[in-house]
Picture (cartoon, one colour):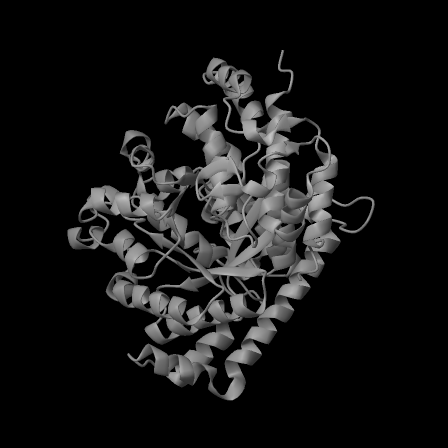
Length: 510
């Protein structure tokens, strides 16, 4: 059990105790007319809309790259604290000593022009497309600030504190563990088209087991730091101390095939060994030449490993593509293969779904299989230039494919977390309160937090039998419902969100 979390039973009891409103669970599907009407009345009032949506319970963020989520100001501060150097041409951070055309990162504290240059180079701040596209600038930021993104515990604390302040109840973070060691092991093992044989080579001799142990030790240290930064376990503990946090192992799809497979094996092994690690994901530009060349191989790799391991979930970036970015044939199968070959339970972005072969059939398959799409509105606008009517959000919803809103890389994007995504969903896509509430519930429902759901079935937001006669925030749940909440981290988080919905929907807004 990770050190940052209380036992599930204690969290569940705390959730029950803090409930402030009494609403029968059997009525959770009823339309909250007051909140819906209020949202409709203020949708053209930016200030009041922002305040309303910031206070609204928002489920959780399922698609969140840790290094890209941290505010750029924090990364600059880390660079200065570590004595890093900034190249005055590329604006990339690197280890000291500083050489020709480099300045200490600490100079950003007294040189506003340098600070602004670094801020713009490490994020989408003030970016205007020109010779450099939004796509190219976005992905280039990670190489520029990578050397500064090593304060993992502080970074988790920052992102978690922001999520809690935005009234989220679950957080999944993507990060890499022990990358140099696993790549060295992959190079030593070499590539073998027989995936079972290659996995055996990676596991032989105990090297992978040692990498798994080292990754877990690193994670212990990171969450110890998280707890220290947020004063967890003290009277001054931050709200985020009780926020359930789980980790997705990110695998760099632009690496050589043997490295991609080894990183995937590490992710699956970590999920078997440590319940903080819940899933694997392939990251980096999907349109990169190596990503395109190896895409189908990667899907076979994930599909094979899913057949071998029992615990790890799969969520994949797929369809983060547009016409003109890649040759037309590459628009026809990426989401399909992620769903049917790799058996991904969630799809990140899914922007090119209308260009997929038999798009309607694919959408029907996703709806029937409850494959959720992680919708990243700001990211899709900045990287791909896809927004408004060109975005497939409406298409997914018309075909009853579950969706939820995510941030992707809120630090790089310079957005106000999930609140900004909810605002765009209202202002640009015309969504109402009922739509947003379903998305918030879907975030926890499709998250990889362990345990049974509070709900009757996937995307069926009626209470499961143990709790169908209980009351949110009223008397203590009946024994069957209490047992579910004590045994399931997922159900406890969902109960906590429903309590917050009841409080939010009954608030007096004048």
